[in-house]
Image 1: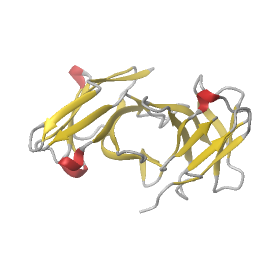
Image 2: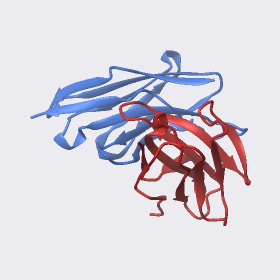
Image 3: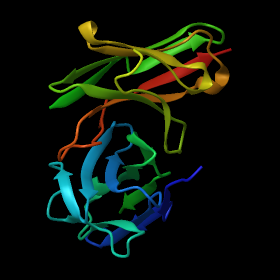
Image 4: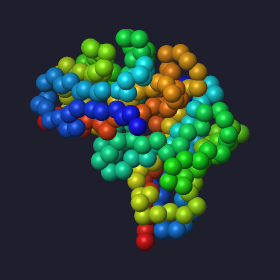
Length: 114
Length: 117
């Protein structure tokens, strides 16, 4: 079964540094999402992406965050200047044929900001 | 806007006992509903989904859920718990139509299921 992959599995960074989290969605899927889960809390929607532009973003997704699909396969989330409160598990997800109602999640990247 | 409430952040059952995890939703549009399971240090795995077909939905690992529109509920059940069912379970809702929120999942707070021998 096709799967979503994410790299790295764990990223440790210093506060104020830029990080890029990478995702390779399922190849024929067209809708892409990032979610995050702070330790012990629920999964929260960050942003959705379709047709090379953001469809919707949450209040969490401020100017420090950006997403892009640079090469038609990877889907990246960039945090320009990380804060302590950005420490969380970040999940990539995608949606597309044949099941257009179910998102498939990657295994996540655990981001630790020191 | 959509929201999900999961009643009970922790549920503890004995092995072989009935599992019941409660989920109520609020949605201004007809929803799709999902249950995901998360094992420690792992990602989210889809257990089952309701997408406007049969209201009683069967999923993996013996779980099932019933969509009750009148009660705005989508409770998850399993007749007999196994030790391997111990995990965190998330109920989620998404719009069932297109638009900018297409596919966007709104999750509940999660319920940690503990299974005692």
